[in-house]
Image (tube, rainbow, N blue to C red; front, side, top):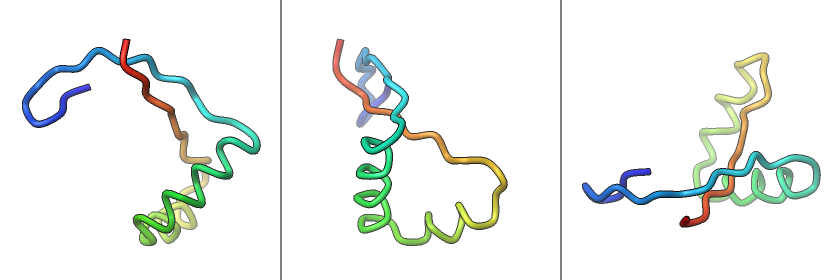
Length: 53
């Protein structure tokens, strides 16, 4: 991952089930247009939890 021009090694974990639903709700509160985007695509938008390595 790159943040403010700095590379940061991370571990990515795909979210599923209740954990994904909770993260999706937070994401929509932060960026509501993502809901409209999700309605236009046929796939489920994947969400990942990133943690520093």
